Picture 1 (cartoon, rainbow, N blue to C red):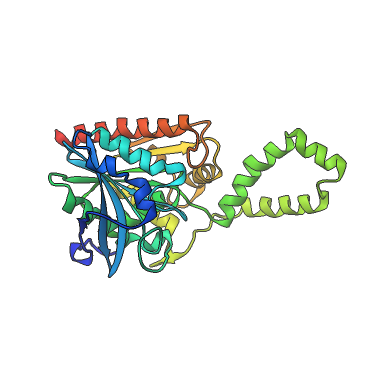
Picture 2: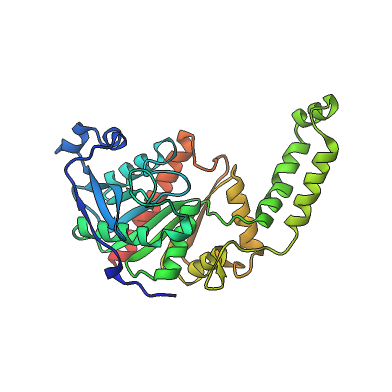
Length: 325
């Protein structure tokens, strides 16, 4: 484990204009120049280990002392699925919270080679540096991440122990292994299939190969009830182990949002119940859990997306109030 060293990472400075077509769609000129708006959006270039990260900072006219860094998970860039992170950032900034969303190295408009969520610690640290450099008065940072970005947030804090990170919002965290996926299939997918009229109609009509289906089910059943195995190792720990250690040892508040119609969220709950080192962590002090029964993995419908924004904002207000006391 290494301690946090600010010298490892470069800061970020605002730039007046960028040529990316994506950036032009994200930042219409009228929005950038409207002096009456409650916040402005600024493109940022951020140095990270000799590469350039590209981000967008939504900066309120009267910013709070708590700011949000949105970590982008999966094969996404800073806008997110169905512009999810654009809308989230603007709503939080409208309420006074500076919010930065950015591309990892190798993703979106950022330079460098693509990397996994386990390798993005320097990118997160550089984004935190940039937020502090560009938001005068900001004292503490909240990391917000969906899917493997939630995993990256926990992994980052476990490795860096960055004292500037005051809280974390984790949505449908990624803990996938062969066993967790198999168990989720056995408990959720196969039950739904057996209750489906479409499945039985296909079986009767020959649209389902019963022997192959039974073979697949048997394989998943065996894997589901094997001992949970972690993912890739670093210093003898799987990323799931590092996530658990980070969640256990992190001293600040945590918001956990889980979708009801998402296999990744179901895998996470299964792993939290049976994975080594995870028992009791979802009941830890300072963790607020929010279940959205009808939501899918990326909260793609307007109602679910709005609920995520509202829950995040309510929790942020509580975090900011506790930090001001």
